[in-house]
Length: 331
Image 1: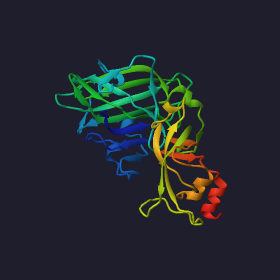
Image 2: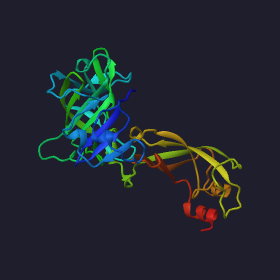
Image 3: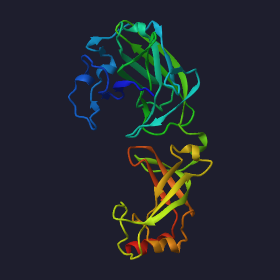
Image 4: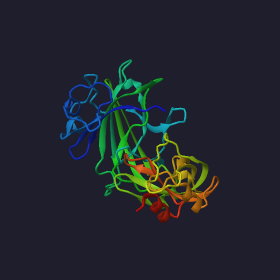
């Protein structure tokens, strides 16, 4: 699947965010600022900059500044990566960013006549509009992005444009109007579309509890089935229990998210390794709990839906926990 290469300027409370992955630019506050980035890609500039009425540049040349005379289309992508136009009222799923916050990722298609032959660097201006009195997108009402589009026939297209719309989950069926202008060196195209924002999972997943702040996890009921038990060796990563003389075992199990919530997980089935308080379980602990190959037990599987922490955490309920942990750690 293809994605746009971005240089991003968010216009929100005088804050410009420059994502330095796009085509080379001429003068602009975001492009010229010598500001260190937290991850090497993103710089924060305390200035209105190019997204607030200043001149916009691509490859050192100003883009067309007049009124748009052509129409553009807003859409998504097919499984083969081709642009597919949306229609008014269509649902668009929001996604969690790696460092928190939520975004939508529309694709844009405009006539290549807005640019000269062979030119692909364009400026995209997206406004996130909402009904009068609403303030869901108040922190991210608009952004300007300079990027290299893909030439497809007589169109300039970009796929999966990152449009951040908030810091927390957007309520299901929230309306948004995307007002989009694309500018090249010779002209501009404009389009507007009414969409409905939904989570990227089915509606019944909304009932599942979540945990955490910053890094947020959805708690999924699951079942574990032991697939193998073997003696721990020196090459295994799990340490042995400090207070137990019973031989340590490596226990692998297959975790499967329970129905009807299997479609709420990105990976509903995975192979995991059982532990007791972080240690390889003692053989005695397995015997006391009648755990053998084929045994099943409930698991709470937490899958990350926001933030950049571990993508998942499993809480297997396979043991009579307190006696096992006491025998393992002595505490």
